[in-house]
Length: 365
Image (cartoon, rainbow, N blue to C red):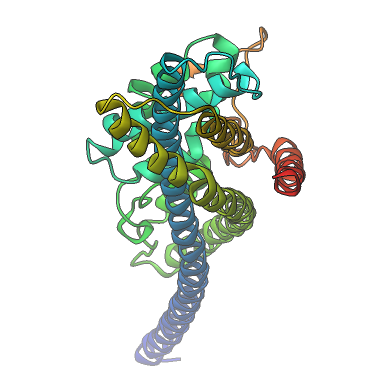
């Protein structure tokens, strides 16, 4: 064979080989594009669903925190009025009138009242974002910590409440690489955040083989992240269910408290104060009516206090039975995915008992 034909044959083979390599490269690039595109769409779809659940949970926690703070504030005013009326009735000679509500129940109501007013001043007054949701998460835990350590709840509701709330709040939406307000970071924890934030950029490369490897690696990372998001979304749904149950329970009781005890007591207090300014004493019948309002008001407040001060999430416990507090933040137990453990058993029991107590109270009054 003549030399030129040999050269041409080699050239043709090289061209064919090069063409095959180019085609293979094109195929791998196309496959990489498809894998990456499917992974991105799968990630975005699941992220959108998760963010809806996260936003809803944050909103519900905020609503629960707002009503709890309102209740605590009303308890504080009710208690102040009750103390003043008891003193005025004693000065009017009605010293034998006694409350039937146990003293320890009244003390717990007062502790919650002080906690709420301190929190409103320290955290809400400071304009902390997500503060109401923070109270929904931490009020019960603060009460638990106070009970276990002997530290008054009011002392924990200042700096500790502020630190806990600040520690619980993320920075912006998930789409912006943060975790929005309250719900996400407080309920889920860093272990869920990590794999999602890790997928910040989608892997690609100029070389076909590397591009395909990177695409499949991204797909595997997305699968892991989607599993985390699905688990977190299921967890958020359970949190929402308990938040709804607590909200409905205390809202209905609070309405009765305000209408039948708090509002009438305020009205009577205004009358008594005006009379005393004119040196007119309160008769025994009115004093007994006032005592009944105070007694029943405290009794109903105690039922609500039992619910509000039951931790939504389980606190971390020391061997001596005290709650763990680090840098002013009460630590919460987490599962293997870093999500805060719902205090399910205690909440189930407390919601059932409080419903029974409220029905019994309503039937007696």
